Image: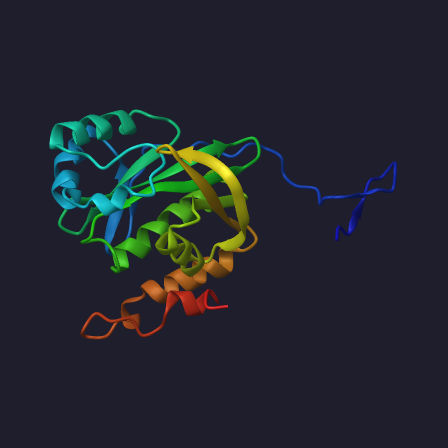
Length: 235
């Protein structure tokens, strides 16, 4: 319940907030320990195609595109995606300077200080790696600390079990199911909704950084502490 009341009517109301708009994302490079995020461009298409070709399962839950039959078709899509302001796309680049994925900020509402992370494409080589987690940390930190968003969303097809697990592991809070939310590739889609708030970010940030620390990994590369456990995702 609200602890605030309207000064004239006495009715319960929300807490006062800074209502200055957040900033829109820009062509920054977000450097991490294991790789980086940089603005997606057409130049990333070749490396991305080599990383994701023949991986049709990557596209099953994308709402309107993929899989791609040929490199030319894929390159055209990357070029078009790179030109958009919303979703605003970043390439995920490994330590070898080759692009291995894409992530975006989307449904960007600066006046409400709300943005969503979505349209995430991870090549098989990126999955279950420190870089795969680090880029989500880098983008969330950018959204909260640089751009000034107060609500950070994650939405996915309700059937996408891997995406739902990832959201909880990263520290998003499950909010419910939006029934018949979309028609995606001529199929009905219920959407699972998750969010992270600016007030929750300091704790999530600390958990990301604890997990990403080099001493959290053994000589075999296996994690010692689970990020999901740190964030209480198991509950």
